[in-house]
Length: 120
Length: 172
Image 1 (cartoon, one colour):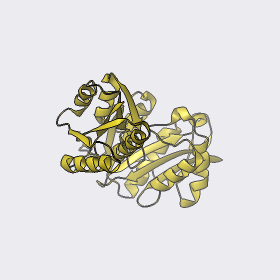
Image 2: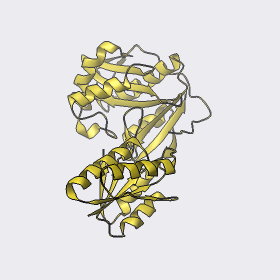
Image 3: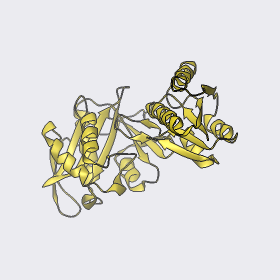
Image 4: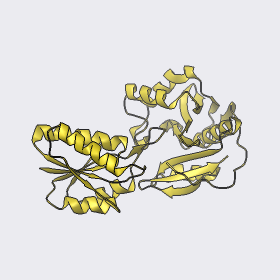
């Protein structure tokens, strides 16, 4: 199966990447990583490099795309290109420990035609 | 997160400790939390009704509750607890990296709907004023009308809506 992983650099999205990579090593899935800017500012180039390294060191094809504007709809659209599943980290964690589900995740949950996995 | 706080401060709130009588005639003590309250708080949260969890807190088992309480206590965090024999309510102000404070409030199910949450909230904000806290924000699930009504009543204003949650803020 082709798995599409959305990565915005948040702690939970990095955990989702680890989760997807580990699953892929067990199942033989392919993982495509789509990096985008979420609630917190990140250097997308740097994030894409980290994702490529993570995939490569696990022996996976380092397929990393960059989503510029409107990442939610771009993730949904990209997933229609033969992907079986979208994997996302479950939002950000506030100082209080509350999980906050951002706009991108909500858009993907509501609009994706594939299964969506939220990793926490 | 970035919060747009209201320009004008709200009025004064009562400071702890206080004794109140709730809507069911129960005498409730509201006082500042101390480090020795940890075990009593763990006990309260272990009993917590899963339906009253919000955005992943309180966690569902004792060791996660302990870990969470330790993470949000100490440092500049401020807490007020409500006591009726045992701890029945807990409100917290936890500092964020921007110098403002995130607020959260939990009341045991048997003690809800009796005005304890409102007084716990006002007393916690009073403690915040006493300690120089200026900006307070919170997030609440947007379908949680009773909680939103209480926050509005004490002076929180709606400042944004992420998606499932809406954000409210106040200047003390």
